[in-house]
Length: 240
Length: 305
Image 1: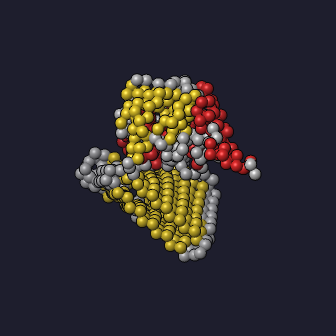
Image 2 (image 1 turned 30 degrees about the vertical axis):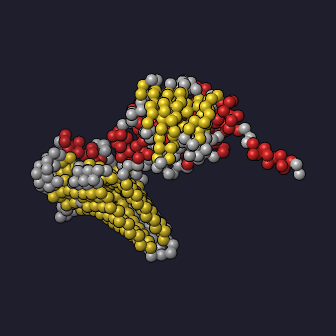
């Protein structure tokens, strides 16, 4: 179980995260959603150790990991797919997957992982993870590096960003599979209804706080319920 | 051949040099071993200043290894090797120098390699340089490569200097006739107080000639590197020069691009990017469980692969 206790994070006088408290259980698929600037990505980065909170505590199965480095947290089972995939000159997709799995990985096994994210594996496995790949390809490789690790806590920061509509359906299937098979916790930051639909629970963030947190059905209504002002406009229109 | 010679040769050639179709091994300024075949002949120059390598025209495939090793502290070896590649011949040449200096005097090798590619010839030239030994005498290497490419010829030059060379000035000059293509990839790693200066001068003389020069270098500690490229396009031609460098510690890299376009149809491009290892790269690898030091090693090794 991952627990965030009273996490605060402030930059340039702005409260990015304002006393966040969350408990995330095993075998559950969580989606964090909310408008841009609501603190979603910062929260994910704080869990991975990329950012340090100004105050508060992070507990992983009751172990305090607040001051642990990124690699220490990775070794404890936290994985993170970056919103902007990182490029490497001279490092191939195969190299990166080998580093991810931390074991001898055959090319066939690497290809299987790539196939899961919708890449025709044999064409990609020996390519360098550099600008010769498109944004969507890099993104899917990034997701594959986290899937290859099968982490206890898997975090995906806006996996849909930069992926074309054709591939998006495929990606949704990937997350459905993760949701079914993962014995750990999956935490996805997303704006996409299809991804929200896969969630067991949804965390709605706004202005640095958790505005809603609960079962998908409950929070879904909160997010997609038509606002009062819109109804009023409709009423005016229908009266003509 | 002594065991340590074999080790040094392995560093340069990457395998047993005697596996090649033909070879010439030079140690401390003298010929050590040589093998030729009906298509590839190696002849000592009359003044003993080097060798001429002749590859017959239409040679379908061949390999030549020309390694040089120096184990004497204080020795300064200058050698002229001329490669005459016949029409439509296709060949792989592996050359380079390894210096083991366990003494107090500087050891130096200046290899001047001149290539004459006839029409349609294809050459893959692999050059590796390294320095070993525990002495405080410097290991100095100053390779000069001159390339003359006739119509439709093609050459790939893959040059690497990964460790232990204290001082180097590397000069490559090339002239290309029509439809000739030259692809150069250079990889250099310097550390401690080492210095490396590398210069590429390419003259695209013939129509549709092209060159692609890629330099990847890493300068660590207090080392200094300088990359100079000078490309001239005289006619319809294409050139792309890319200098990528990573600096660590107090390392310094200077890139000096010079492209001279003498024709409206000459398309010459130069790109240079110098900087430290990107923080995101470190974070990504650390998120896979590698320590910061391990992540740096993976990034640098990949960069210079």
